[in-house]
Image 1 (cartoon, one colour):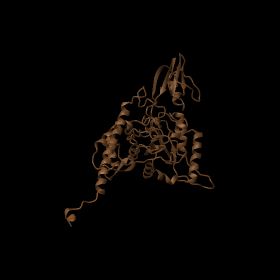
Image 2 (spheres, one colour; image 1 turned 30 degrees about the horizontal axis):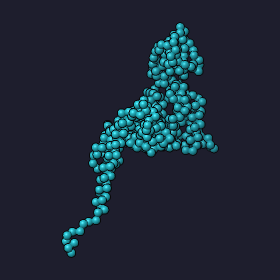
Image 3 (cartoon, one colour; image 1 turned 90 degrees about the horizontal axis):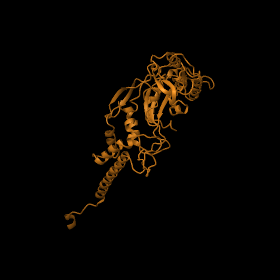
Image 4 (cartoon, one colour; image 1 turned 120 degrees about the horizontal axis):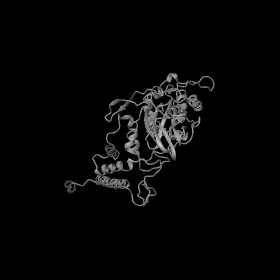
Length: 419
């Protein structure tokens, strides 16, 4: 259901950019019976990267937990240990126990412990070559073949939320090898990832541009139809324009979507260079009946050449259009300026932690420690509501006056009464 909600707009733009037609001639076709033959793409990381691994340390009185699959091997020098770690898929750092020799370690989180010191690799995902995980590759082949049996031209759309379920979040070199098994199991351009970070910040940021597959950048935003007043408009405004290209080591493996058609506010068309990897934007919430301004900002991105210049001005203009106001209304403008600075400046979680509808509050997101005094941000939301109520009263009074004037019968003239 979540995948079905994933950005109708984004799907249309993906089709427009040619994703569904990319490499149509090489798409897998059914042969006899139920068998489908697929030609895996070449491993995008076959050659050794030109990016050097960056190390950080020593971190005194710390250690890294767990050993790589090949064990916590020891080496005589730091240089030897670093070289071995860089050549080991699931090695992320080194730990020296007391006066001992440096050992390979799998963990990347520093843990306090007296008498030891550790070294961590800062760019472990982009400075090394990783083999395809054969088990995950076979799983990917099975998954794609199941789709291609029904439609040989289909694209496999993979929910990014599953990256965490699979244990790949936060990403590790081993997780990247496994994930690439999925990517390379489908023909070029036939695997589409749906980036589903809970607040729209982008899962791709954690992966440092190493996906090497087309993806739609979305915001998950809410679980279970939660109707809290929230959504960081400033962050949403950067989707998808902040997307980084994959590392140059693997960029050749990414299908080329060099241009995208955009329509400006006056109806004219422009051509915008598309970032490597990102091919669309949208949202994937569990329920849409809340925060329409947040979704409208994201939905309009494919038709803009960049982020809106001023989010507050955009929100105020949108409010006047939505309320069908023919003239500027200060209460509406001030209300939405307050909302942009308060409720629409935060994401919090996918549940309702906004403090709106929770009086007295039970969390510290919008209440002081006494759980009775609202924060300045919640007060801004409160004052915005007051402004909207006042504006609503004005509109109702104007509407009632107009209705009364329309319903009043015409008065008889003196000439008609005398006759």
